[in-house]
Amino acid sequence: MKIVFMGTPDYAEIILENLIKKYEIVAVYTQPDKPVGRKRVLTSPPVKVLAEKYNIQVIQPINLKKEADTIKSLNPDFIVVAAFGQILPKDILEIAPCINLHASLLPKYRGASPIQSAVLNSDKFTGVTAMKMDVGLDTGDILGYEYCEVANKTAPELFDELAKMAANLTPFIIDNYKKIKPLKQIDAVFSYSPKIKKEDGKIDFRDALEIYREYLAFYYWPGIFTDKFKIKNMKLIDTDSKNKAGEILEITKENIIVGCEKGKIKIFTIQPHSKKEMDVISYINGQRLKVGDNLL
Image 1 (cartoon, helix red, strand yellow):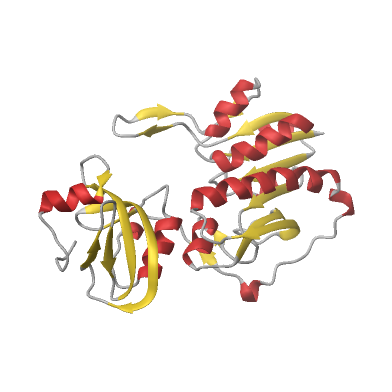
Image 2: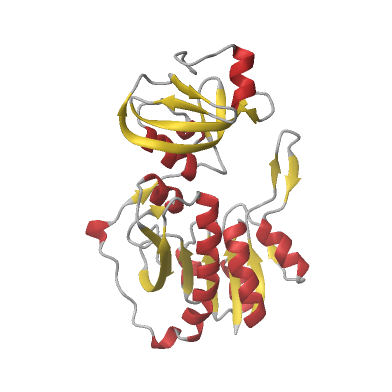
């Protein structure tokens, strides 16, 4: 069984690693290397690093418009796609069955950030959908799915859990593809998850539950922040009390409790802009803040 794999981040890497154990991966498509960090060090995507470890051909086009002939020459039985970051043109979709492992229970959360959307919206469940790709954005017929609880997991924790589920689901779909009766999505009930932007992480202390869900959803990037600092470690205290936004309500040896217009949060560590992460007690001592003062 010959597979062309298309993917980029850690989520895709976990899926690829399981496929390598079971099938012949004739090529891996991934995004071009990108500069990372303050020093802008050119860095390979996780999928590329894994593929090169196994001496698999890696192709990193800016787009796929001229790749159909190359993929045809590889004669794949399947094209497997997981968080690739580019839309597949029609001429590639017609080469072989294209299976996408999308990290939501489609048709819910089509688009770029399904895991963060599930966390932000306090969903009870999320999951992975194996979908036969078409020319639309995550609109293809459903081949199978797995699900899990969202609970109070951070987005990175869910990414890891869903990637492992997808890694196990993919071989089942491939091996049983001819037996599966695809299920059409119900377009009337779909929702869309847009790409996360840095400014999405800015918080205003109006709603404690909203801050907490943003903290979980944006844990890896962009984080949650005010004009003065990022909140690096926090807990939700309550969701119903009425307070002044940003007022310090309590100070202990290790944390502070801060009011929101609705609810309270407990903060342990913060990172002032352009400085290192620090415990919040050191920060408020340096700012000479006390109970009743405003953290903002």
